[in-house]
Image 1 (cartoon, helix red, strand yellow):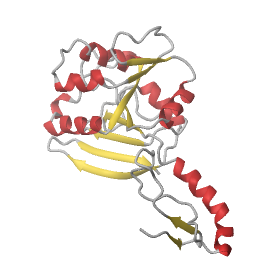
Image 2 (spheres, rainbow, N blue to C red; image 1 turned 45 degrees about the vertical axis):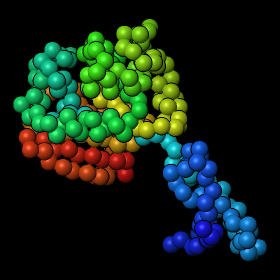
Image 3 (spheres, one colour; image 1 turned 135 degrees about the vertical axis):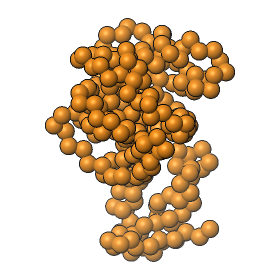
Image 4 (cartoon, helix red, strand yellow; image 1 turned 90 degrees about the vertical axis):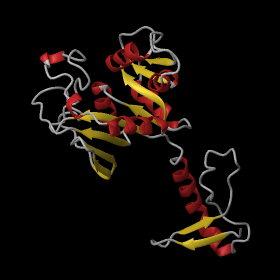
Length: 255
């Protein structure tokens, strides 16, 4: 394949040639950006600044995405979707509000999301709820195997150990810096569900790349909200899909 260069729509020069080894973190991008050796001298001089910028932009490609997956009501409530006693903080009495709208497509969506992830990032309460349910499950349960084998990171200032759920690591300080470090590592998506306090912290520091929301046709009137009060978040819709039970999958990426 021959080397090439071209102008883009704002007059910058883009240089293309196959440059990635099979083990490179950029291997799935079959083209690199740098000056071909046979570039004319006048164009090579122009290329230096452009190359530096393009290589800097390329380093962003390998950053992992943080994907927040939540069950939410029409009024943005995410508290206790799965059970009456799941989270009664603040006097919340509507726990288990998702069950009347269950459909197998919701389970299929979960497995699809997990197949695109290789780590879970959770707040303490959500980690304890999930761990209490999945840790006792014997090997061979497809749902349990996914949750138990995946590396997990629990954010807590009160826990002293993360041994209660296998393959878990405790983050007890410098949360924003630790999460940025996780994002910079090679890998698939980092998934979050529940974890309202953690989600608020990450949203306030612009660390959430995607919101994957199952929106339920119910207004709860009270409860913990997905988005923190007073924070503006600009998003773009990347998928909208109604499910047979009246739930709508809405996926938004950072604008």
